[in-house]
Image (cartoon, rainbow, N blue to C red; front, side):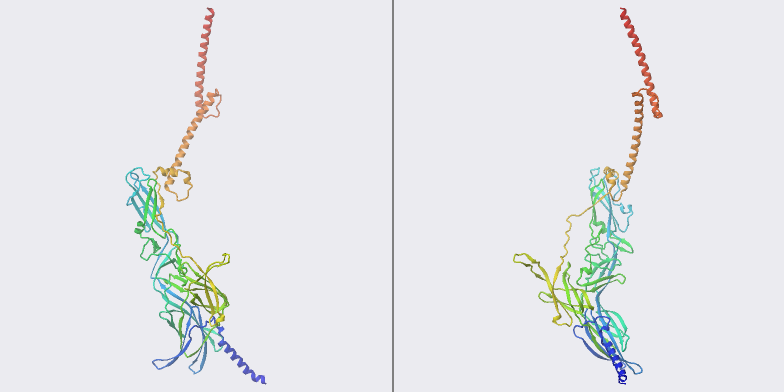
Length: 626
């Protein structure tokens, strides 16, 4: 009976305990709550409208740093039309997500990296006239009228020409083409809009479970206006001024990539400077150049007018190569910028700050409320770090926090006095390693090398700085200090300019020149790479025809001499030819001719011999008689 009498009381006590635990436990929040810095104040404001109706509002003020989350528990009561009162408990989390500068495109255009294709030739005095001041060499080779430039000069030297007087005339076409298929977007920016991004989550805990989310919203607040409001809360933000991350001017990046690059000079919208990037512009899909400037920057010097050999020079920059010196603004301003994004659709550049001054946040609730501030305890086990001075003199602390959570405060010594202070917020609990890049201004101190008595160096000279960190709200015993090493990148070196104008060789083949014929009749020239010339094709074709004709003539001559040899061999050296089966008809006729001559000669010789013999015998008879 005693147990039955106490059972309802026991169950009610257990329910109220569970409810109280549900309402007061901060770990029901979806994120880690930061411990506030500075003062935290609250107040009640009484307002009266024109009808005389009064209302009470609750106002709280606090400071919030970048990446931190402030958490509040708000308890208030509402009365319905029947007069019943209901208590509400809500959990508010306010996160300072980012500080960004929004730059609108002031001007923009599309461009490409240009390449060059040059064709030149030279006319000697008294020779063929293919070049004069009216020669359209671009049209002759079917080049684009928008990007091809004609060039003419009548004061060339007579090297290689037959006539010793007068001057040579040279014509060239300089065709500006795409160096690659990539296109780029140039943008001009000016003064930015400073925007703080605040994320608000509201969770209704009931008076009884289940928990459900009331609001999850991101506010982009212009810090020049500094306020926003809705049905639940009004936020007013006050911030110290922040300087522009990006200097006003021109930047560029690949089309549809979102990248933003700097560290090169870029032409303005109506500027056509050949020594700046962006002089090969694209509008409505058509490439165009300022032809007068291109023509003025081009020159050619004749080395051999007869052979059509000229040296050309184009006094321009950023052609036939990508500007390797260009860098992303994130790299160029690493200590200031976390990232920068170019949005061609909205015509904006958004640059995110790596650090930010604290914001003064004022929240106004429409009902009289009880506000409880909630935060998680911060802690850290250890840290690692180094300081980097890059080639652009950005000084950054590379900090790695080991097994930490919550808000961590720190400082870097500066000239043995008070140095740079910083804060890091770790958004989750017990993170094994959390890295953060922090911009600083302090200098490192030199440490002399350590030597033995013998003079041998045991430790090299180096630069170090002392860095200390501690969890927010912790005492001196939780502070950790270390010496970190400083590393420095050397500044970029200037490029020594060329003292003389560099010329490229441009050769034009003259089909009437003996040098051109000798060049292309050389078999070594046939196996060289490069674009084939029509002159080369004509010369090789003519040479082949001549060789074929010569081979035919030699064959006929050798065949005729072969017939004569057969006749001499058969009839003159070996006597009579009784049979000539292997001879041709023509050879056999020659053989019969020589045979008849041989027979006639032999019969004449025998008759004369017989008459001489008879004469000699008669003389011998007369002598004997005597």
